[in-house]
Image (cartoon, rainbow, N blue to C red; front, side, top):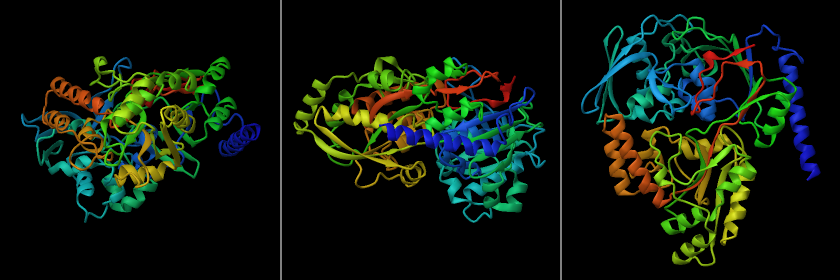
Length: 527
């Protein structure tokens, strides 16, 4: 054990020394008047910076990079940090939706320019949608469009005036306004001059910050003084890759960074004692296992339910994660608008787990392999957490072979190719339930898009109804009913909800953690 700890400490020290060289010494960027926020990120590498390509960096990529460089027609509004996010205006100020949810008329924000001074208007909007949807467009990029499945539902996009845009759907679809928050708009001038390749290396958007520079370890964003929402208080944000938990904490202690994402639970108490500010709040984020229900023994709901009764979530949340997560006993996190406490189902009951396994024909258990993301956005303590689950399941006869996998490999295999490797019985990853359109396709749908191959016609019927229901309250009610069915079927192993632990220096002001993975960096300043 001493050798392992020494190795980790050495890795952290080497990373901090490298970071010191990048930032120019102990006091670089930390003067009293400096409005520079230096973030230590858990991302293992920087994603493609061309709009949708940023999603390959996970939600942390969107949170730190995408939503700062770019705008969508809508934005996630997290101004009320005591409630789940809602959809608010972005590059569109308002919209009208037809009664059958097929035609959306947007009023576009006036007086906005991209950071290269290209004007934002209906022509710019149409150009962006064309480059996404037309495979022969000079700026088309398959790497980008793969992260925008909503665009396949669109029949046409047309201008209705200099600042009017109409989007017509192929079929009734009530989620468009929700889905457009991260369909980022890029400067047509930039795309015409340098194409998708240029945008991936030097992105030009209209967001609150603009791209400044990038190298293999650090990305720099600068204030956009002309942002339509008002100039940010920060002059600059630097994002440094520090995927190792101990390296991030060491960098913060050495004051090479001011803020760290995904703070290690083991470090939070000592960081707080040392005078750093720690924050956490439950948000719409699930950490669990997605089981491939097309493979035995996971084709039997009793087996899947047994696994859910066999795990001790509270011990993982309280003892391993030291209160930086809460047990998840159903499909919907408490921070999700569709949550209903009455649907909390799975308790720690190993006797019931053994009974269900026996009823399913596996009295002695079984074995399978499971892939998990070894580091990256939202992964918390993946090795230790998966090993804890491995140990708990072994007590009811279920033996799990864990396969650590690189974040980018998992992204490509699972989220792009939508395929669980043949020798895996499932995979572990963190993900949000807040993208309601994914419920009926990628997560739980019967249309062949579900990675887990799960399908319940009754749940699908409710999700189909929700997809065509314009009224928000009625739509959420339908989703709650669908989730109730899904929870009973247990296509996933529900483990914990993250509380997004992060730590920062006392110099960081104006930040209050929302119930969301998204953060409004425009209100943050350095004192």
